[in-house]
Length: 200
Image: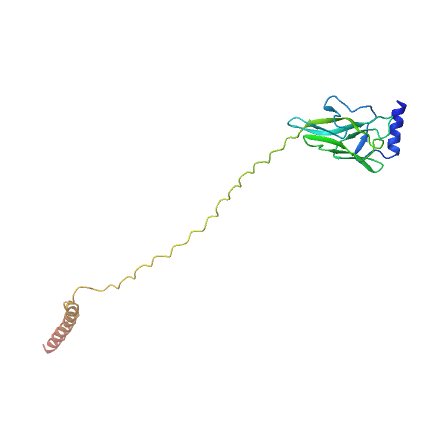
């Protein structure tokens, strides 16, 4: 146990932890619950594909041991690299997708970056994609009623003057003449009788 603690301390002192990697204080990567362990058939590359509806949420990679130079046990929760003295040792990719992988930099010697021993891939369910809300159709505004156009007044025909349409038979003249003649005759009779009275 003291050797393991010393190994971790040495890693921290010499900058063997990558910018997004965490060195685990344990001997091997987990292999229970949501973790799926893959033994190294290829010492330089390991991958795992989750079932439909699941994605890789984290990767753990193991190489060498705490007693060997270049040994590591690294845990990643996002794509990135694990570096040793400024050199890329491991590259993690596919986290957040259905297939995750870890690859070793083959240009580095084993005493700097050991061969992959095994890797474990943590899986989780994918979040369902929310369906976009169905837009509601816009409520049509009621049409603004137009004011009625006033109809122009119908002009009334002019009233014709009251003209006597009967033919003039002379009655209109005879009446006044007879009236005048009667007046004159009456006056003459009156005068006649007055004269006769005086003479008698």
